[in-house]
Length: 259
Length: 301
Image (tube, rainbow over all chains, first blue to last red; front, side, top):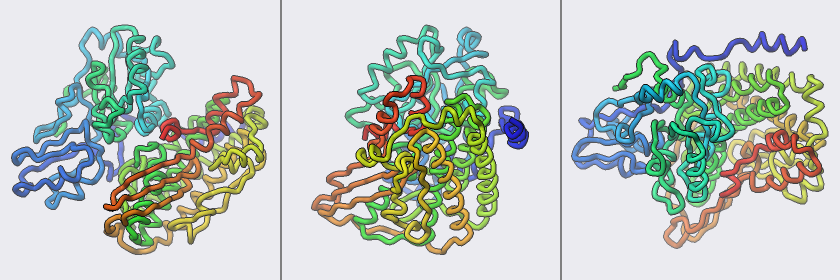
């Protein structure tokens, strides 16, 4: 018993100061990409040809990148001869609409908070049912880690529950394989209204690396009404938490757009 | 390949790279071999630490559960320090590695590694000295050595039955041909053994990484590979944190993949979990399940 107490004292307080202080990520973290079309050479398609998910393309001299498809790998940055594509350590990337995920030279419009009626219901207590719809467990692991003491999700009143009947919404990961589709739809039906849907990761948003595969449904978009999209492969836990708090109007800079 | 099982991104990427390099006939540098080994052992550290925390949680011993939840993240963040991704995405590339652990970040890397080791050793130590934990771990979910061998179990679950099997030792590749990691075993085949083997492996993985980072060889990060040889078959084996990962690639007459088959360690161990549950209380299911921590997505490949 004495050792347990001594270890408790020694391990110290480890919950991050976020959101009062900025979240810390590795300096090599590949967050929000920045596109500089002025560096593109005429007719160059190096990034588009290298991209495994057709997330990036050069449309008449203007680079376009779909964060919903992006795996945040290094294939485009390695292929680009002029450095027109680069990643920043910006982890805030969740959006309210699918179209907002498509970057074409403009800033990224971050997610808006829920409408006032729904926000008043869920703002201080949001119970989510997590559905892994054919995910690789990468997104699932980085969602799960939010419940550890570093992120301490429950201090924001957000918890994961073991039944859709107890939930206010779904947090969906994975490309929605045919085998899980029926279960996903039944789970959604079982959540009492009003309810929200959160799509986490490239797979859930667009199918990710499995886009177009005959046995997947290219994510949850088109099957369920999605309230917030969290891009990444997998998204950093801070990206997911930022999105959740933005949805609930719990951040100081609710209408922020990042350059 | 990195999304075959997200928590084994490095393990599966390693197996894929080995298969591709065998077919292309490439040689990768000593430095890249070391970086691959370091990434693989970091993945093992993160997952073993997470498992110890999850086991503690399942017997309601919350101190270790809380500490290990954080420490798992510390190991993941060490991987991110090297390659930007907590899961090692982008770290391995056919022909070498995508990122270097350059001199400027080695000191920080080692400091953070030692701090995490100190904390995880102490957190695990609480498990072994708490009688309430031991009462739940010992003699729960026993798999005998005979059953283990008959089923062909792999990884820490097999080593916890006293079976000395470890791909790093039996079929060493890359840096493991030169830097051997002793096999960690325990004979009792119960939940305690599966937890304790993980704890031993944490110590040995850190020893390995410490030794490698202090004597980094030179060399380029990535070598260009030629085309895949046509009409060839390559088999690669890697000791992922769950156990043996096997990739088999077959090329056609044009040097493209005609077949590609993956066997995740979860496939070998699932029946082992079923055997561990024989004649157990239903309330011990979560504990036994966590002591194997198998992957659905890996099993279903």
